Structures are given as C-alpha cells and as structure tokens.
Length: 173
Image 1 (spheres, helix red, strand yellow):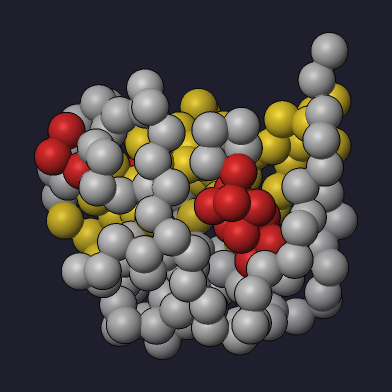
Image 2: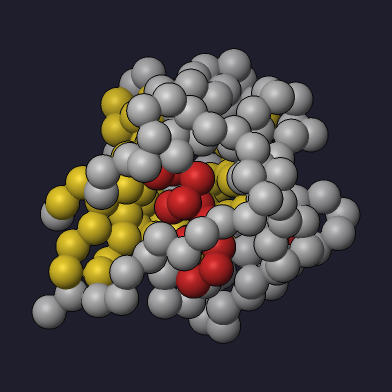
C-alpha cells in the first residue's frame, strides 16, 4: 500500500465543496492514529463513492488531524470529525444520504457518517460502532469497516485526540 501525499501542510477546516480526489483502479484505506495505536479502515469507495471521496478529500487537507473524539457512548459508538468539538460543527458543505444495498451496521467497527435529523446533512463528522447497531442501517451512510486495530476503539475516551488521519491506497489487480 502507498500513502497518498496530503494536499496541505496544516489543517484546513472550511470548504465550499469537495473536489474529486479518488482515482479509478484503487482501493482506499484510512489510517487513524489515536493515543492507543492505529486503526485501519477499508473505505467503501465502490458502494458509497461520494461519501468516501469527501472523507478522503478532507483527510488529504488534514481536516481531521488534532480533532477530538467529542462523543463516546460505551457499547454503541465513538464519534469525531467536528472542528468545534461540540457535535455541531461541519466542513462547510453537506452531502446527501448515500445508502448502499447489502451494507449493514452488523458488527463493531462499522464506520458511518453522523448527521442532523435531516438525512442529507452528511459533512465531516463520522462514527465507528462499538457493537452491532442494526437500527442505523439504511438511515446513516455506511462508508467503511475497521480491518485492523479494532481493539483500540474500546480505549477511546471523550476528549481524546484523533492525532492524524492518513489515506492509503493500493492498485487493484
């Protein structure tokens, strides 16, 4: 796997819309550095391309670096991606709900977009499930799955930093 070079040196936290950054023929991953280790997420660029593109776009602009885990609900989710740290912030734009048939919040480590009551307010906040959460399936965009470092999810405490997000990719055969 290769590391995709960030587009900025310092975090940029406001945008009008995401540019297209995904390249065809690649499988994309996100590596989240937390105080307890590294979490590797396989991103579902084929099933939820708009959401994954936005997430990768933000990560390549270091948007997530240094943000806190502002919501931690044991047995349910850990959530980050809000530049204000309050649960009310966003990236300056919204994406519509993107539901892919066959994807479900059926285990710990499923990665979804947080939103307001309006289903079309996906922006920068995302959560990772700590247990199956079937009631979220079909209601919240599911765009990735933790494939390594899942044990670190259970150590995250409210206020812990998301130290860095790196984007990795590998060429498809």
